[in-house]
Amino acid sequence: MFTKTLHLIGLALLYPSIASYVTAAPSSPRPALEKPNVIIFFLDDSGYGDISHNGNPTIHTPNIDRLAQEGKSFTQFYVGTAACSASRYALLTGRVPGRSGLGSWVIGPGSARHIHTKEVTLAEGLKSAGYKTGMFGKWHLGSPNEKNDMSTDTLPLAHGFDEWVGTNVSHDYGNAQLLQSDINGNTPIKGYSRLAKDLPSDLKASESLTGRYTDAAVKFIQANKEKPFFAYIAHNQPHLGLYASDKFKGKSKRGLLGDVMAEVDDSVARVMKTLKDAGIDKNTLVIFSSDNGPWLMFRNTKQHGKYGEARMHIGYAHPFRDGKGAASWEGGFRVPGIFHWPGVIEPKRELEAASTLDILPTLFKICGASVPTDRSIDGRDIRPLLSSKLSDNKDVAPFKFIYSYSDNKPAAIRQGPWKLHVRTGSQLRDNYGFKADRETPLLFQVEEDLGERIDRAEEQPELAKKMLKELEKHEAQVKKEGTYWDQPKR
Image (tube, rainbow, N blue to C red; front, side, top):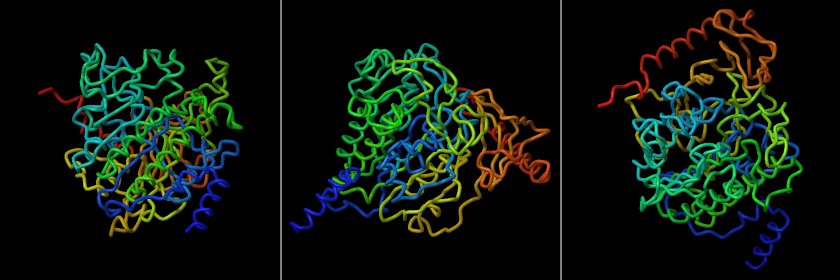
């Protein structure tokens, strides 16, 4: 026993990235498949190439890499759209952004609208199945303001979360607020307390976000280790890679962006250690992804911030074209997609396509929540892709994905390996020599042509017509069903 202990200590010293996992843990409190805990890490503007597992040569993310190596890492994983609010809506509801009624892919702190209270979120569904629910991070799906009578229906506690600490919008808004739930309700916004005057000017508050969220998530896990829980850890970083705490500044060869990613990686390590220490790591499904690709808009500017030129801190979508704010190019939509669950999900580099839309119906099936039948759910149950232990059914519905633009309306459709563009657009104001509309769409085989460089529409006219009809069928269905904001108040 003494020799084994020395061996474990030696491993921890030789490989610091695994030191956090070398901890004796109590036995698991319940069978792994019985209402497993769920943790979702959801980064902000982190590109496919911002983690070392996907080949970045100077960003070091050993703990995220370990999630990928021990779990299922999807090479073709998509988010609902290429910008913030609409992407988060898609994750939390399993529905395409066109059903949100928000009208835009980003809503600011002055927007009257928010995620509608009639939507069923991940948190609401899991809470109905007996889960404790906590959110730690950026919301960006509504803010109390004069246009909505300071309604707290705009914030997370109205949408299934038992507790929250985070920002109402991205921390770079001049009037962004850092809030936390307050059970006493004796604050300017009933039910919430404000933790910083405003984030952009409160440098330490912005630099504290990753650590603050991790501290709160760890406390939440420890408090709820004996019962099923859902923790949504929505880090504000990397965004433009501008805020890292003192402990991580200057640590990366990639500069500040690398420092930021190192702190996010440390967050993953701390959460995984907490699960191990509590003996519930085998009872917990951990999902890691990002809301969209990197914010490339600043790459050709010398705009300065507190840390110098913004262009120096932009992430990577390589090998895909464009990034955040793209109408339909892959770099805005394709991100890391990792599912980790020891003993249930076997390690695999998964080549089949999936998206954040698939998370809600899949988790509801795994966790015993009812999938809504009174509205369209656009995601699929992908349990068979994750593990044979999760479903007797080996078949998964064919992958179909609708790319939406800034108005939350369709810009492209993917079916199988083929992708048809009917609109192009980019915050870079660069269409790369292409133009697309419904009369002259673009067609790419994106499993062969990762950079979307070879238009195959003339070669495959019948396929292009068939895919256009499918896109228009989807568009008509969304319009017919409408949104909850379209319905008369009762």
